[in-house]
Length: 257
Image (cartoon, rainbow, N blue to C red):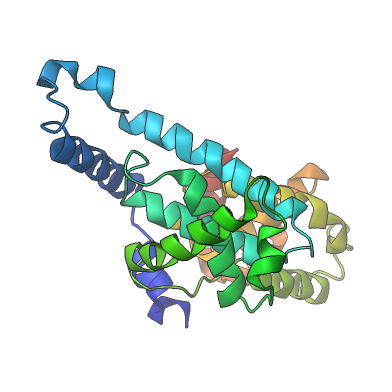
């Protein structure tokens, strides 16, 4: 079913080269459109504009602020809302420059839109109570940027998360690996699973891997923290193709951590 969604069709990419190209295009497009406005010579561009690498660093910085905002939110925000808001934020800046749209304004807009899409009912008054500073201005920022955000992510609002797959894999492990000396209580893995998913938010993993792949990687990572191997379960899961799948998953886990 996932392969029929807009998430898969438009937001899962074959490799990091495509992500690099999109970010580079957004950076170059802003510089091209604005270089004449401030009368900058081509050799002076680095002094007046951000590089793509600097833009990525800024996006990651504000991404950490978005996560902190969600953690402090009252009433507590479900992890689905946090995950959706993060992915809206990352999608927005995959094709747009921070020099054109300030990330500070997109943080609150992404969280507010994610809350609506994930049916986390919170009024605007309740929402802005979580914002430091001028709450009236915060509400205005959200409302002014909501349509912009919708347009820039092409109104593709449904996000598929790894959480449901994680629950399914944990149930499957309990059922299929009862006789195994390890993995007898995969519930122990939950803290490390959450840590892994949190770390993935700071990478491009959500652009490159499907949610079920991320879920399985999180479980492998958590098992490894207990000195346990998931290879037995992976062999059951993938059958004759298990060696290739195990190599693929281990390669990704090493590259991400």
